[in-house]
Image 1 (cartoon, rainbow, N blue to C red):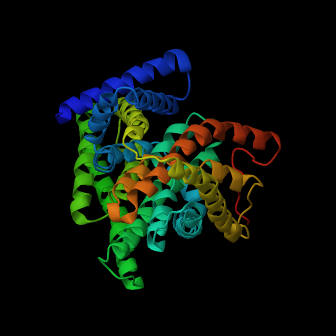
Image 2: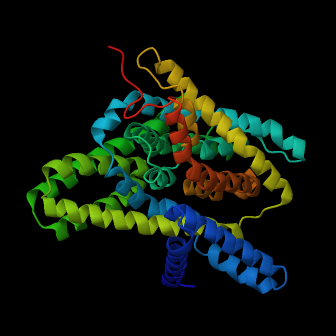
Image 3: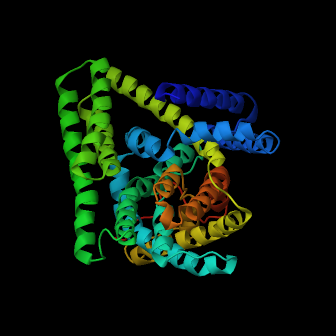
Length: 424
């Protein structure tokens, strides 16, 4: 099939599922689409037991989409920019220490805990992986997914303070997670031996370089927007900024996701306030809101359809289910430690750790990274575990995070609007 045919098919599937969800199911759009695409995949697999050609054809079509390329090389840049556009920079700065600590130290702690636990868990089920590959699983599953978080928290009616913390962390911990993943990947494949110097260089080029490049993109975009007043061209400028900037970041070997986040924050705050007319602001918001909704629908439909090409066995499914509490436990520890470190400087609500743990959703980025692993890294095992954790995270955590927030609020465990205040 041609690229156009694949896009046409995916758009049609997402539109049909979106219609059914809004008309009959009435779940949050992304969750509803994913669950229905999962059901469609299961029905195709069941039909394939009687008519194998059905599963073969469907699996071949889905495999041609190349999930990791579609997400990491195409969708992610637009989704991150669109999400960052609506994050208040002043709110983000007030939560900066907690967000920065969770997005760095928290990711490293979670990677180590998940990887170590998996290494000792696998032999109990007759499976073995080198420790470095178990750590790779920890690295790809530990960062929270900004796409999943942004799409679901908006509809969960949580406080602005909590939304800023979870969203801010998810926007930035991707950069750290990718650096950790790349460093472990290079060690696992023998491309580089571990050294703190190389790790520091990788972090400097990828993370710091990505942030610096994002600032440069933001300034260029701000200047161009300020010089004209034509909403059609200004929307086109932001579209070019994301598309061209993400592509250039790839060639510069800097973090494209971090660059898009920083550029989105600058355009969404300084650009919105100082470089746009009311008309431009309205059209820009509407355009990027539509881009965000359409790409989210496509992404979550594709997550469900990926079940057709994920090589499950009952054994790997069972281990994947065990990985759910394992990952949540590591998340709780990796959140609680930064909170304990910062408690002398600011007050935290008693339920903060629970909310940040349950609100830290995993999504398509983890699946894309698992698909990028080589066969020698136990990719089939790790992909199965990742898929189970991601589906649980989106379907169960995503549907209940609002309920947990309301329950903790009623019990006085979470205060609104800001449950953390600096000590004077």
